[in-house]
Length: 66
Image 1 (cartoon, one colour):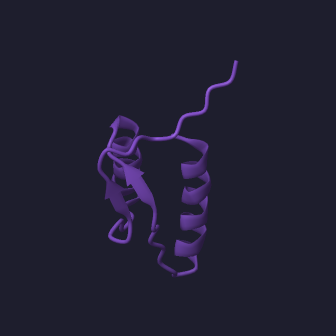
Image 2 (cartoon, helix red, strand yellow; image 1 turned 135 degrees about the horizontal axis):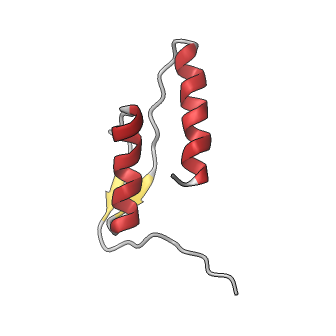
């Protein structure tokens, strides 16, 4: 799981312990990595993604360093 999802998961857990709800509003692409990032919050945390959007023909940004 990517690091940013781990951090968000910790914040979600902390707010749920306080009786609060969270609902991420994010943009997701339609490639394989975007599919993974779309499924992971729902499958692992049952997060509500109704405020998030998927964009067709948009690719996940990737940084390469040599």
